[in-house]
Each structure stands twice: as structure tokens, then as C-alpha cells.
Image (tube, rainbow, N blue to C red):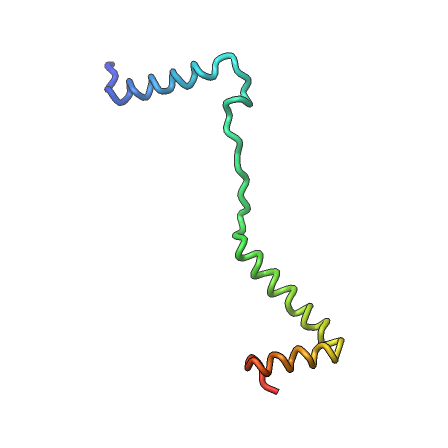
Length: 82
């Protein structure tokens, strides 16, 4: 069965890559895998904000002077009402 021109080019390309690798250790020509996290970084930041922000707010409520100062600033900005 005769080779098509496409098959011939593919075979020549493969032969060249095999020839380049001859006599070299496997680590010299193997590509290293880049490990990606299955979870997007935005999701991690959002989760951290949702978990950590209430803890910080709860700690601020334990210190009444800091909490009053923070609420005063937020009410001046218009984010919360008194």
C-alpha cells in the first residue's frame, strides 16, 4: 500500500524527532508536566473572604471602641446607617 504525501511528511517528522533523541537520557527530551489546580484562584479568594471576613468582624465586635470607630466611619461614607 502506497503512502500518501501527508503520511510521508508525518513519518519523516517522526523519524527526525526519534533521531534527535537517540543516545540522550529520557529526561532530556521529555516535557515536564505543569500541574494546575482544579479550583480557580478566584473561587479560593471568594471562599477565604466568606470564611475569614465574618471572623474578623466578630473579633472587632469584641473591642467596642474599635467597633464604634469603624461604624462611625462607615456611616459617614454612607455604607451603613446609625
